[in-house]
Length: 488
Image (cartoon, rainbow, N blue to C red):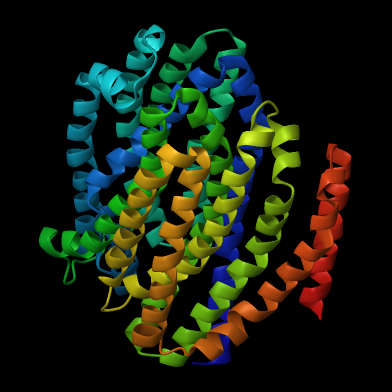
């Protein structure tokens, strides 16, 4: 590999990650500013309905059978090969698979809304009319949300991360702004549900038109080897199994809380969980940039370059994520009290802290997923994901009745930590050829030691950070300690 090739790859990676971080940071800021307002306007129980409406899209996406991931790799390969027919095949199959299964699942939710409201989520009877309306609008809007995903996958495949992130921002940024406007106008949760449906429909029309205008000249190229529906679907099968498991791991806990506790408890849990799930944006933005690069290196059999790119991506993830996670672990009670107030500053603190630790294992597993997916051992991914999901469900069943929200968080931590350790060992040994010593030295040591020093500096003073100004001062001191250790 020449130095110019390595530099070009680094520039592409930096540019792609920059676009990804910019859009997700904007979405995170909007959520941070608007969530307290929405909770105060809607009330904690009705806000729980808003959360349930958003979860529908994640469930429907399962029925696309992993075709989004398959579309990314096929579009990237066919663009590089100049195969216009293959591009047409990939876009067509991705659109079909995103439309068929999710539409049937949405119909089940739409027509069975009363059953889900009464028997699955056990919504208070006084909220039945609103809840049924919300679920039906959520099911209809989620169809458009799912249909946006082939456009995002295609834009990622051709490495147009600027346009991809424009669509992502429209999805994640317009919704909280629209909901805030609807609630300010006094239209309530029914107005919010209609806003969700209308915005997703409009963004789908925009994304489809944008992607078609970009890909049309490429699809006019001569046909090469192309692909078949069977080949396209089989590549996505392992990712589909992972997606199902991840929905269980990251969404089913909310269903159990709504069923076994209450909508108020759901909100107390979902707000810190939603905040922490924003940190999954970090591995997400790196993964979207690194996937095409690892695919290229697997194809060229440049194994040492493959290892270097993998190790650098893991180290980059830890450098940028550990400071925020460490700070959040320390100041969780003060942050929640200042941000959303009420019972969040007491009852949500330790569940949130356990989930912060679980998030570290999520970060480490993210790059393993990319390494496995681009190799001949992509079946490692569903094994890891289902081990994580089944351990989590077992833990929730055992611990939720005894310890409530704290038990749910502890079960999530156990369910994510144990499979992650085994997954790291298997991928490093059998796919990447990386020893534990090298992984520690090149990935874990420096970020881990810096985070430990930061924890030692800020934890003794966290109770002092009772105002936003003090919290910012303490965070700055912690970041200074982290930066100093990193520089050393």
